[in-house]
Image (cartoon, helix red, strand yellow):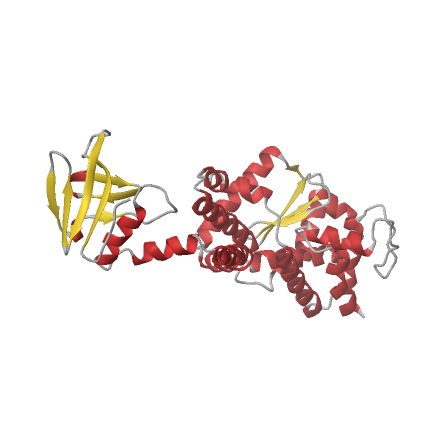
Length: 359
């Protein structure tokens, strides 16, 4: 390493000419405000604005980018810093180097980075997804929903086995509730498959499977489920989940540089829609919407409770109050762990507000 003073600095290294991978010994010298690049057979005067000194990263070799695609490489980081400091440049690079070698600041930066990452995925992305989902035009939701329904019919669902009269009677029973949202074009469909289930697509298509229709003891139970699925549509939960998944994938690309994450999440949006579960917050929001609809239309909240408890365990007896006996796996810790790893709130939690409203 060369000696440096307030009057001059000299840095030894190797010079690579543009278009060549073969370097030869050279030195970069500062004398007062003059920069000179020298070798045994070569000398060139330089202005500061003509060169670019790469930031310092630990003690790895340093690169100085010169005119005509030339590169000067040196292991003398201190000498390069001294030259940069003389021209009042490189302060950021020097600060970064000091931070890299300060253990306390490294730990603080690590904690801050982790917290920012967690907050981004738990709050930032959901907020952005909600904003984007509500800004998308109806045509986007229609295209996505039609593609999703077509794929579901091809690989997972079959035509309903319910009599046409029964389907028509249910549509008529649903109509007064659907009419409470005149700004949405709801379409009720019946399919065979997926067990006892009901789901909503972003364009307002509400699908009831034969299983849930047969499990319900009366139409009022199905109407309460209808209200819940309407809540998903009104709040655009389906589009939020799709946007949220795509944003998460892009952020992972920015963090890791792995483009495969985007290809997995962005190719075939209907396939994504088929595999997405609503978050617990979305389920709670849809439940709150359903409870308002039930109360506004003088329906019995216990109808929702009874059907939910039956769906939770079709082999468990449910009394007229929607209550059931605890089973061995329903301890407090068991319920807590189940809630942590579930996208839906626990059934007992979901029905509590309906049971309270019924009282």
